Amino acid sequence: MEETEAQGKRYKIIYADPPWPVTFVDDRTASVKGGWENRQCGILRDPEYKTLTIDEIKSLTVQQISDKDCVLYLWVTNKHIEKSYDVARSWGFKPSCLLTWVKKPMGLGLGGAFCQTTEHILYCRKGNPLTIKRSDTCWFPFKRQNKHSQKPKEFRDIITSVHGDVPRVELFARQATPGWDIWGNELENSFEFKEWGKNERN
Image (cartoon, rainbow, N blue to C red; front, side, top):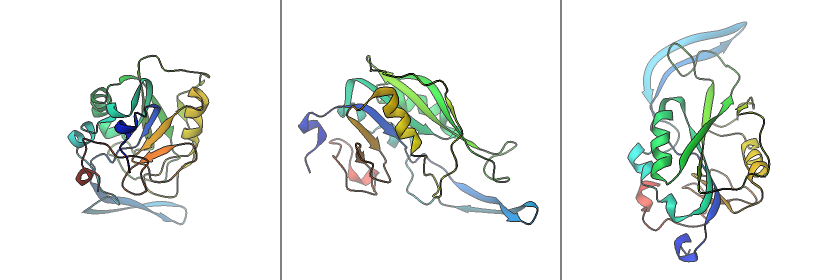
């Protein structure tokens, strides 16, 4: 497979869902008749996918594939919001605002005093990217997905409605989507980064 830089291809939309570093603690709730029961096990377990350190995520050479006028939609959990700004800047983007996916509560799951029922996309820009339609909100109450860490497909539709049918790519993709190029370690990639070894993503 030829490398994207050699092809000279540049994307105007980059949609990324990095595997942020995380360790789960099995302080989970279980469904019981009439409500929820908190079962605190205190057992550390690994996530279902390989994670990366913040420095590994920052080192991804996104500059190779981003157009001079480009938008970045960067998924991030609550814990890493501050770091996500550093990641975006290291990729050559200027952070603009947070979009929030609001999920229906399902008992006392992840979190401390407040259980985590939101995830976020850090919307970023570089140059003068095209906006063909403005969104009237940055708050999206889409239903939870069936697979852990899976994101609602509606976000891809929102992105293309705002920016149009332009060259676009999903980084750390877990499924192929028509109209989108993909890169990750679970699918056949549309390209490979020149200066980022396969050891970091496998």
